[in-house]
Length: 58
Ligand SMILES: [Zn+2]
Image (cartoon, rainbow, N blue to C red; front, side, top):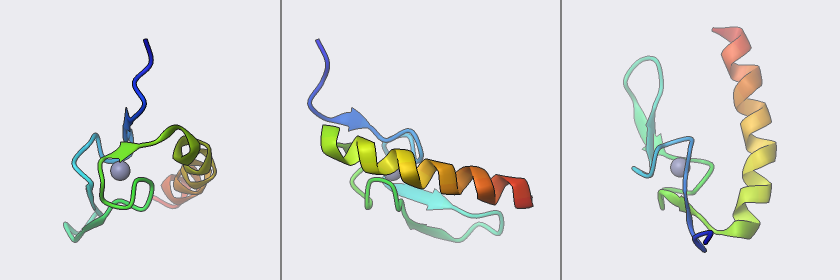
């Protein structure tokens, strides 16, 4: 069975992300909830592509 809520892969369910300098901020993918509802998963796919662009800058 598929859970209605999925653990956010970006923040691994913590709801928080930290940048390279250690600053923490609410996860932009799940908005700090740590989980994604199925319709939010579609939105996160777009955000994840942005993350890929950010990684290219590193
Ligand atoms: Zn998240």
